[in-house]
Length: 274
Ligand SMILES: C[S@@+](CC[C@H](N)C(=O)[O-])C[C@H]1O[C@@H](n2cnc3c(N)ncnc32)[C@H](O)[C@@H]1O
Image (cartoon, rainbow, N blue to C red; front, side, top):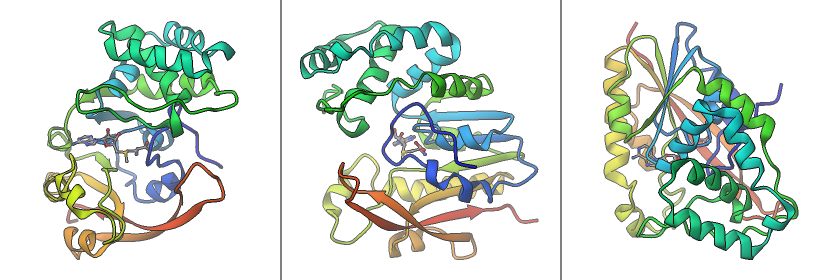
């Protein structure tokens, strides 16, 4: 059976890896903890009875909170933004400006869904001042994900939503929890700009802190799975005795469908000692 699709487009979305991740979930798991939830593709498909879903993207967590608390009102509000006239650069840039100036959380959450489906490649990117700065996407007829939003709402009814850093979220994991970590990846190759990576918001220090938090959660009784590129650096980061699945993942590297490549990824699993 093919995996259910989340309603948001999200860089690094894990819809295609869900079946591999599902094989690592212990039968005893009662709760999913996802510190890097993004589009929620994993939580949506694992369907655990309870979920702790977290991310540092405040707009993402606010949109999920609005969908959880007022589903039909929010869906109707978003649907009203998806008109043929609104699929133009003029309306897009006017709404982007409105979004960046807005304090009203309800309107901001609805505009976030509009920007996600009308912006370039579904990217979510901000400038140094925190302004959303993705250009217009030029799609023929952006799809309004009504059914996908309703399906996501039933996941959210079983979920606690948190706007927090991964360290605070992993600290809450213990016995009965399955934790899935999908952080921003280390660069795939040495040719990638390492200087920029070292200074990025998720650089080597964060990757090391994440590996330590995963090991600590395992010590407290949680089972933890984590995705990253397969590089010498990540092999060194995750202890040799951890369960390590090697995956070849099809990647789209540009908006042209033909321009695809396969990347080597690791799915590392930390299991508590029996
Ligand atoms: C690769 S994406 C996750 C994609 C997700 N698995 C999916 O299927 O859509 C990484 C996510 O980590 C979030 N993030 C970045 N730094 C973070 C941090 N320090 N703590 C928690 N989340 C963070 C980003 O906002 C982004 O949503």
